[in-house]
Length: 423
Image (cartoon, rainbow, N blue to C red; front, side):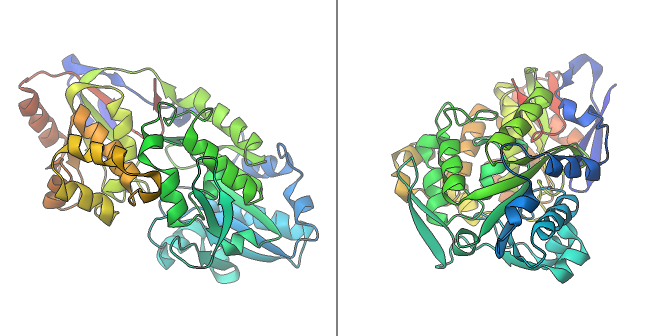
């Protein structure tokens, strides 16, 4: 029987899939892609050959205040490799630049000191100025309207900088098309009001607001507009493998360079759909599977493959619990998914509830298939979120068989649900 390993927190869970029921494995080719250079060399090469923008050291010349946008604890960006090199480039152009690393938390909780140390290493923590973005801070700047009509309100520190740059990584994103690039600004350093408008129900339901789609995606259109208005001048983004190692890097303009990165990613992570009664997926392990909220992303990969009224078995350690109070409250208080979705669609864009977008996508998944959830979250919490708790793959499969009324249902696996585009 084929043995499949699934990332779970900082560990892996393995399971031998019965031969006669196994339909296949949907795996990104990124995981087998062999870079010809070291991680450090790839980033150095990208910074030396920017696309659509001058080199970073040239852009830093004469710029007194520089803000570097960095991802938060929910993203496995190898900042220990990227950020020191970006800082060196900035100081090469201007040794006296006043640099601030601004953690682009979006609407997430604050990144802890321990998480910052894990992300950057002790030297940067000791020597650099680091500030956490707060989406509810009154210290914001209103920069007019988004193409969608929402107010564009961004972090004042970033807007007043003489030079704004960003690190990041590119992965498939279940409604923005891809992560990286312009997302450092919106949602990264936007006000809660701006984020919730951009993530409104109409946009989330839009046929172009899907994994791998940028052109015509209303969410992306707002995001790239925000990045341009904010004067995001330079990015360094990477693509990583299952070990969270850099296998590709790109630098330069926040749209042109980012598009080259997304083209590379799309060429490697698209997988042909394998329909099955049961589809087992993950959120790629730590740090992406720390809570249930984030795990919805990995469920959407399984959603694309599982047969209607089938079962998704989702593995996500979720040691941080649900991760989003409003998301949890929505499902704990409303048991009728049709009524929930109808309420979302009738909610005016400007009144979009926090995390409504995630709830909308999660409800869509739950209407398509039952979800059995393997985690360390409390069973009652999992049940409140309309899922069935389990604590091992064999137990979850037995539960799925009972739900399906079939002792021999077909099984397919997506070992890393956030690293693939199921086509």
